[in-house]
Image (tube, rainbow, N blue to C red):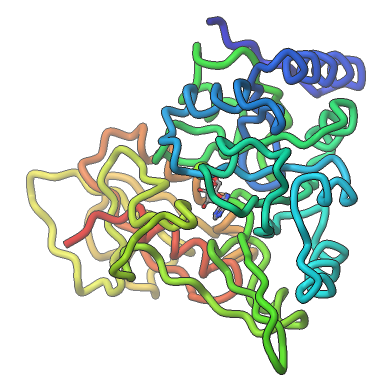
Length: 345
Ligand code: AMP
Ligand code: MG
């Protein structure tokens, strides 16, 4: 199969690309689409055969459920039930964060094929903010199931060329909408009724942070699967290894934890690229990339993370050493990804 890249650089090209994507979705095909988080691989969420193609293209195990993207907020009720005891909170979250990078788990409606939710009774839903994605869904007129457009377990792609690196020849079309604005996957939450406040449980940290969610309930964080004994993949984004570059990566909590093997070429994933952090001058690194060279700090680091990991992966290094980032705001999601990518032991 030839993988085509559809451009969105002019209005004329955008119109043609939107039409091409919509006709492929209607014919039960998969299409890679830009979102504000990472590129997604979309298919008609109500068409089980089309959704099966996502799993094939990604070589994703069938137990890993997909996120359902909605063309508008009201369609939420076509795919999920909103239990009355959490309706107020769900409405507040939807009104505040949609369209945007917040995914909410709800009991699923029968119309959603089991393959979408990996047989789970819940469905993960969100409304995406990217203008091209939005236009395609509006024309398509229905929900689109779309996980990240990478091979299972590999880095999430934040540009069309990174999608091509992983899925060339496996999918018919990539709609190029430029680099992703957020660069990290959506925050996934589940809401539970409780007194005195509803509980918002974060299953996957992401761009919508604890501080963003706090006004709407008590925010708790689910443990990663490597932190719990019974590791049924309720949210497989929580699997202990995920999002890994092919080059082994090690997250070092302290510079003093590092000892070099003289035979190896090491690259450093630096947070700010400053010597005072203690990592930059620790070793004659064969390569250094900086997550936040500007003043954006953790937000900037989030946008650049997957892009820079992809770049290091092509550098032929023996190991990538990652500096920790501050455990606050979106830094929490970055640390979560780095821990999952990190070799154990
Ligand atoms: P991706 O978009 O590739 O990050 O994949 C979607 C992720 O959403 C999955 O790996 C899960 O972590 C999560 N997810 C989707 N549906 C559910 C569900 N019904 N229950 C729990 N987690 C889900
Ligand atoms: Mg993914």
